[in-house]
Amino acid sequence: MPTTTMPLERLEPLRERLTAAGYDAQPAHGLLAVTLPRAALLETAALLKTEFGFDLFLDVTAIDWPERDPRFDVVHHFYSTRDHVRVRLKTAVTLADPTVASLVSLYGSAGFMERECHDMYGIVFEGNPDLRPILLYEGFEGHPLRKDYVKEHEQPLVRYRT
Amino acid sequence: MSAADRKPAAKAAGMVLAVAPDATPSGAAWAETLPNPVRPAFDRPSTEDGVIVNIGPSHPATHGTLQIIAELNGERVVRTDVHCGYLHRGFEKECEAHTWHNLMPFVDRLNYCSGLLNEFAYCDAVETLMDIELTPRTRVLRTLLGEYSRIADHMTCIAASVMEMGAMTAFLYLMTIRDYIYEHLADLTGARVTYTYSRIGGLANDLPKGWIQRLEEILDEYEVYIGRIHGLLDRNRIFIDRTRNVGVLTPEEAVHWGFTGPILRSTGVPRDLRKDTPYLAYADLDFDVPVGIKGDNYDRYFVRMREMDESVHMIRQLIDLLPEGPLNVDDRRCSFPKKELVYSEIESLINHFKLVIDGPQVPAGEVYRAHEAANGELGFFLVSDGTGTPYKVHVRAPSFVHMGGLHRMLDGYQLADIISSFGTVNMIGGECDR
Image (tube, rainbow over all chains, first blue to last red):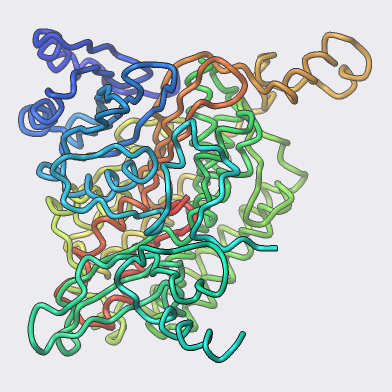
């Protein structure tokens, strides 16, 4: 966006480091978008936090591509309060094993956001001790933001109103 | 209902901790089997003289539907389990079924104290995907209206939180000015709270006659009223006793738990997206980022008061900066053609039809754009598959993240401090639960 000044050149050392590690890292709309395998997520997040100053965990969510295998992309966003830059980590997981490592050991704020992602997409965050429903309720069936969950679907625990 | 049915209903109204396995949606078994929608993190106290108290979700002193399950030892809060989600209405799912334009009324209802800030952040994200550069007038006008909304939002927060501590006069003073602002915005947009005023690539309509003049009057009134608030509260013994050293956050803790906005700044971290990565017209403005020293309730109050002053300072500069010119970009992908052209030439008629029925064709891609909303970083993560309907809309809502760290501000303080600490967080159910 032309009206924004995001100091992207500060991301260059990180981009070189991740490219050297064999991951795809490209600038995209004012941040560095990195695609990496599931096994590398936790160590990359730790690298971001300890060596590159990404101290603020912004967001985690998923994208559902029903026709694709692996079906889900788990998307993490980080921000550096020192350099004022953002990084996006994208990890693909399958429907049969929708598991990624949890980042609660690095960022306290990851706890609630991973719970929401678990609610909405059924992604399991390994290492998060508390994946109780948060925006949904106990007994809610299914994961509403998956593309195969129809919007009009009725839940068994909600009494049918006539 | 027979007498036999009534007995289990009373049981269901209380705290049933386990999920009933045989919940069925039919017959008289309902009252018996309806489980508690929430499974608390703890169901018995950690010490012998502890007691577990349920606060909310519908409590007169929580101006939002939030449930806090707290373990108390006497009046002291030992630990808390915060539950949100009572206002969840499937915002993100619903967005996937409407065109990019039609989401505008929905995003208004995220943070309903400052709807315009949500709209501008959403539009910025879509415009980034479409690679649109705003016209100079829209750029300045959006900045001005955003700051104006920020004043209204901070006023709501301060007014509500001091009222809960008994400061009724301060509440009424702040509400007076806030209502001037709402009525004034209604002159411009036609609605007090839910504006639907922003458009992709522009704004709905230009300023009515005399609007800027009234704006300057309100800013002068603001200074008089805010002076009274400072006089009533700043050195008020009762207010200081309730807020100083209550709900303290350290800078490291605040960053670790994802706090942004006035709460993070109250701990002394000068992080403000308007300053760090300027968007809209903020790069042309002169303003300070106020920070606190202790990160307690008093600092959160004072940071918000100072931010409103900075907003007024910015609005006065923006009035001088405001250029003449068109509001909407000249781009057929998103801007509607003029009505007289729609009725007189076929190209404009088709253009209008395609924009209404198919929606603006946003190029495929992913974008994350964040604005400094009144509560903190409001981010929109959008995924487009190249059609007129979003593939995915995700909102990084500051209130939701703040709820994840709220227990750090409550644990170890008094039961009554829950109310004052929760008030200064300014949790807005609309954006928290989506």
